Image (cartoon, rainbow over all chains, first blue to last red; front, side, top):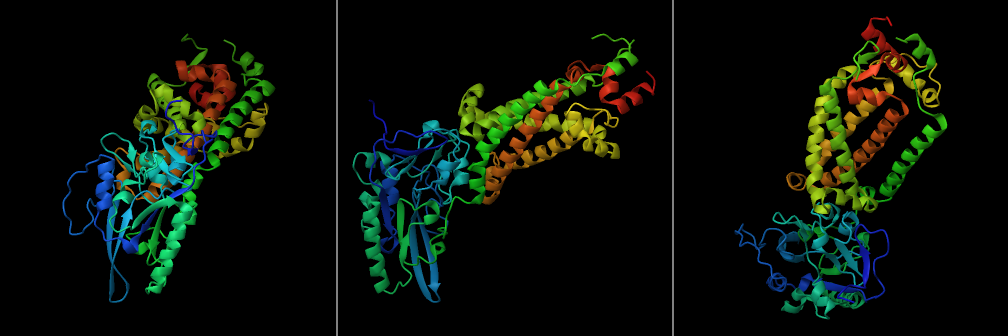
Length: 292
Length: 210
C-alpha cells in the first residue's frame, strides 16, 4: 500500500469507523511554564520546520509578536505580567497553540469528511485538502486556536509535528527548547514527570502548582505545568474549565440525525396520506353548480 | 390557457415569477445547506461543484432568497392577515386533512393553513438572515464574539431544518389539492376550484354570483 495512516481514531463528518487497525501509544507534549524563559526559540523552530514566514509585524509595546495566532503562526508565546498576590509581580509566559484535545471541538464541528483527523496517539490534525473553509472548527474549538486564512480560505493550526512524530522524531519546538521547558513522550510519562515538577514547585512556595490536563475535553495531549493551577486565567486567558459547551453539543449532537429522520418521516407520512385519503378534488356538487 | 368565463385569475405574472424565484433559490439553499447539516447529506455538494463551492455559493443564494422573499412578503402580507374565521378554520383543519371538509369555514384568497405557513416562513427567514450574517466567515464573522457565532450556528441549523419541514408540507399540500399548482404555474384557476377551496375569495371576485 501507498503511504497512509492506519492509526486513525476519529475522522470528521464520518459516521463509520476510520482505518484504525494500528494502535499507537498515547503521546503528549509537556510545557513546564515554570521553566520557560520566553526566548521564543519554539516559535522560531515551528516556523522553520513548517517552512512558514509570517509578516514582520509592528511592536505594540509588549513582547507578544505577532499579536495573535494566525495561519502562519501556529504557536505563540504570550506574556502576562500579573500580581497573583499584592506586590508580588510575576511574568507568566505561556506557549499557546493547539491543545490536541481527546474530545476535539474542531473535529466535532467540522462538516467536511476527513478534514480533521485524530490519530490514536492523540494528535488532532487538519487535512487542508479536505477543508471547505466554513470555519466551523473555529466555532467548535474551546481554546480559540484554528485560524482561517484570508488567502486560501483553509484553516491552519499546530500539527504537533505529526510528520516528525510519524517518523519517530519529537516536535520541532521540543527539539529546540534550550531550558527543557518543553518535553515530549507518552502521556503517561509526561504526567509522571509533571507530577514531580509540581511537587518541586510546591516545595518552593507555589502551593497551588498543578498540571493542566482539562477533563472537560477528555484531557489534552498538550499539558502545562502551572505555578497557579487554581487560576489558569492568569496565563493570558487559559480557560479554567474548557469543554465543547452546550451550544456546540446541541448544534452537532443527536438532534441532527433525528431531524434528518424527521424529514424522511414527513415525506413518508405525506405519501401515505395521499395513498390512504386520496387527492383533494373539487366536489361534484360544486362542479355541477358552476357548469358553464 | 383558455380565457373563457370558466376561469378566474389568481396570481399575476409578476407574482408567479416572484414565487418561483423564491422556490428555486430555496431548493438550492436547502440542498446546499444540508451539505453542512449532516454527513449523510455531504454528497449533495457534488451538485454545486464540490464542498468549497457549496460553502461559497450557499450564502450568495441566501442573498437571492432574502431579496426575492422580501418582495413576496410585501406582495402577499395583506392577504395573510389572520381573522376570526381563520381561527375557526384551524380548529377544523384536522377534519379537512382526514378528508371531510363539510365543517370548513369559507377561506379567503389564502386559507388559514397557508397564512400560518406564511408567517412561520417569515419568522424562519428573519432568523436565517440574522444568524446567516453572523456565520458568514468571508465577510462578517470577525465582527462577532465566539458565543454569538455559536448561538447563530444553532439558530441557523434549527431555522433551516424547520423551514425545510414547512416547505415539504407546502409542496405536499399543492400535490394533494388537485389543480392548485395551476394557479402558481399559469395564474388562472377554474371557478369551481375557487369556490371549493377559497369560497370567500370567490364570492369577493365574482360579486356573489356564479
